[in-house]
Image (cartoon, rainbow, N blue to C red):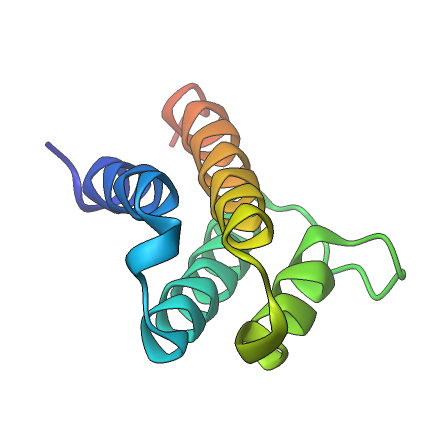
Length: 97
């Protein structure tokens, strides 16, 4: 299992246990997601976006307000992060070197 696949699985497991996660764990997972997405976008040749609707910005905002998120919001944002990373992984796996 690749590190990316393991991280996706970790995000999904955490989403399923959102009500038991500490604020620190939520922030850590979201910040790792941001770093992973940025790195994968760079490898895929996808330019950075500073638009309001960029998922990275949404994840950063969620990480900053982790202490105010409900368990349902934590679940949703973690699943969103896992979905974006999974999509980028598929894109990179199909990209010729």
